Length: 548
Image 1 (cartoon, rainbow, N blue to C red):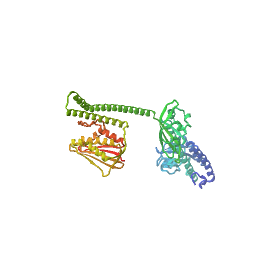
Image 2: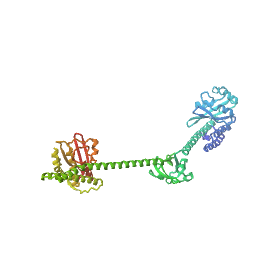
Image 3: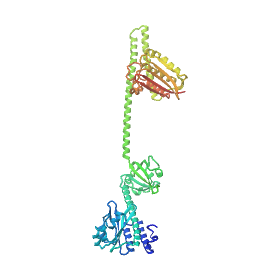
Image 4: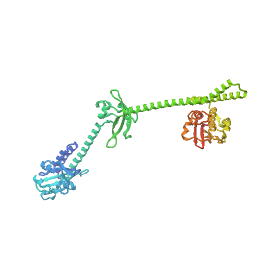
């Protein structure tokens, strides 16, 4: 048996059960249709008054924040009396209703005049002729929510029949009060959502799972420059041209908690908007997605500012690159002019000497030798410059072949032996046990090694050494040129590959093209060139070339 099944209660006769059922049905219909709580509670109170003639009923509602009772319904009690007990604080001696709400138990004052709990309220009760009051706490989902009181004009104690009737009606009142609380909370929640949606400065829309728009707020209408009539029924993919992110019209709300992407939209006046769009599912009670919530933020200004910053940055970089290129050209021409001046002066000087003086055979031959050496120096420099230019233009002619390294190294060391002897720097080859073949241009490999070994000799110390070694490692051959010179500081290593930069060396040999040219030639043959150096210990240059 439940509290809403009066026909099954043995404490009620058939007539009471039928009457109570009829009234209960009407009250439940009021609750279901959202009737006002005061009207529902009035119906409950009059039900008991009709079934128990001579009684007068009231329902008080508990405010848990202030622990006070407030008027809910009292169809037959004097209005002045109801006003007098409105705001009644609950407590152990607060009449029948205040005490019942406080203790959570029914309180029967069969004779108000003799009940100590009524001492403070006795004048008010006697003023309106009230002699008995029986109050039952109304229990809701969260505890006591109010009281149901039955008054009589003469001393009275409730009969078992009255107790059964009040028990049923009290439960019905609890259902009405709980329902009103839930309905009120729902109404308040809906109003908060309505205000948050409609008054939000961000464009917002609600859409069906297929992307069809069902509702838009004022900000969205203003943003897109369209009326609600124009937007309702449109699809999201019609309104926004997606830049990135999941397919909005195929949005899998069960899989994605939220999706964010950038999109573009065109207003009726032709303006193109950059937008940030966030789509998230609205789930039903069972967790299944029921609709989509869409937030749209206008980022047109932000994107325009970013594009302007990027344009300015690119312009600055282009200007810096152009200035650097101009400086490099100026430095190159200045260095080249400096390097050409010395041999040209030698040629001019010795040519003038031959033209103005009658030299004997030996002196004439020496002068011609100096002219020839200066011309060779100029030619070698011009060839190196041309090679550097061809490398930068990716136009260096190469003749790849299978090249055995040992005879190439031997040729290079033999060619540079006179220089090594003059500088008192012994040369040594560290050959592997088996021949090593590379796929490269033999002439260019020899040119690379000549530059590297010549540098190792020139920038060494007297009685230092230069060791050239090579070996196969994986898919590459590694050739190392190791010297025992003074070494190079770490902050200067990047400058090694700048044409004509000799790191402040004051020697006349070399023009500062050796290492830049060597690296360019190596990379043109599909290899790499790396330099490691330690001040006071020497420098090691490693060339890696593909094995044949």
